[in-house]
Amino acid sequence: MSQNVRQRRPQPQQQTQIQNGDVKHGSIEGQDQEFVVRESPLTVLIDTSLHIKAIYHIFVVILLVMFCDTVIYDLVESGKVNVGLSTVKHGFGDIRRGAKLWLFEFAIAMLFYPGMLVYSAGAKLFKKIPGLNVIWTGIGLAGVVALEVAILAVPTWDLGRTHLALGSSVAVTTEMFRLAMKICAVAVACAPRYHGDSTPLPTLSQYVYFLFAPTFVYRDQYPRTKKIRWGVVVFHLLEVAAIIFYDSFLWERFILPYWSDYGKQPKIEAGTVVRGMFACVLPGVISFLCGFYMLLHAWLNACAEILTFGDRLFYEDWWTKSQFSQYYRAWNRVVHCWLRDHIYRPLAPRTGRACATFAVFLVSAAAHEMILSLSFGYFYPVLLMEFGVVGMLMVPLTATIGRRFPSCFNLLMWLSFFIGNGILWSLYPMEYFARKNCPPSDTDSYFVPKSWSCPEIVLKPNWTFQNPF
Image (cartoon, rainbow, N blue to C red; front, side, top):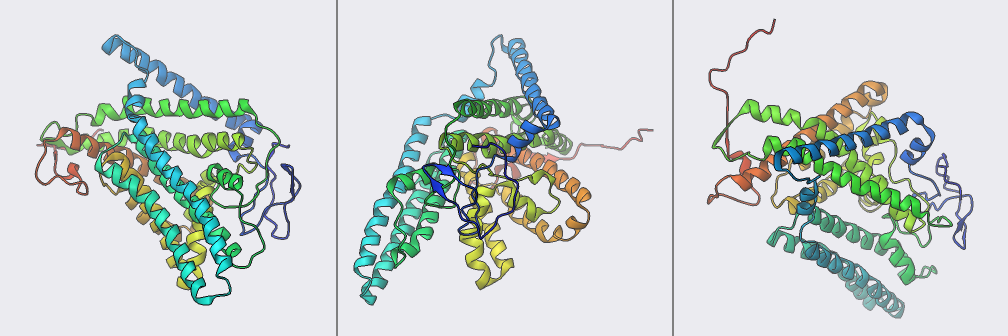
């Protein structure tokens, strides 16, 4: 099977023929979601461009330099080597509890399949009895809603009751939303099959495959590769592990020195806070790029290779965009396609495009904020404001002018990434250490930021500006 990306536009007239796991020329078009055998953009760029490969090597060298810096720092300060292991161990603490929560979520997702079969049998039985058919439809809808509520509410209640380590909480909450979106996709895709459509329901193997496939758009069949390249799987998993340590080094070398003592003193100078926020800009952007590469490239490509899932277009060249609407569509095609099919398109004809777009941003921003709140153990809607408010406002503002001046607005877009990530990597640690270091008070709340009242931010006394010239 060719490993090159097939650069072509979706053609609605084409149909995909899949025989014994082989994919012939064409696409699975369905609801405007094309599936063809193709590699991820970065895979193609790294394999075909020496320039991009050199940039990749630069990031690897930065990782090695930070590793050596951490080893030397640990030896000088404590006489023993840590290499970020303590941060990783703390971040993924209490894995057993996290695994139990994931097993609960997966059990709820698996419970949907027999429920779907029972509902289908009842729909055929009551097909000619209008009254009972309406009641049975309501029961089926209530069953899906009950499963969705269970898969979202129980982990939320458990994590809200007792905080889980950051890394483990992120894994549990992202899986919670992933499986809930999978259930919704199957329920919507199979709805016509309950009421007269001759297409059979998915088999158990098809359903389980979809639960783990790197897509939220359900199809009975997907383009598949002929074999698993285990070398590619191991390489991508090693990249995931390396980036976890990458972020650990960034946390230890750049975040802790500035914010670990935040809240130990009753007052702090405003200049110290501003200096710390600017110091977090570069590590924040590096973490942003590494997080994108780890999740949307390395992890999803490893999963796709294990499952012989042929379509690896999990993202597009978002780094070249000059319009925020294009960026949001290209950044994460996996989630974008689900939001498009299950929120935007059902709402747009009824409420208009503007309201449908607002609903998409609202749902996406709320889900991201819920993941962060449950993972950090407090509600601090910084990302909600950046993504759900500022980001949404930038969509119409850059719609026309970004097309006229692409280079200028691509520069401005990257400037917003730098500033936004610097703010995120400053305010969340400030709040985290304020809750850890500041003395408890009666006004402490899950929803009210502690860093707003402790410590007190003051201007430097007798501060004057001296002409540097």
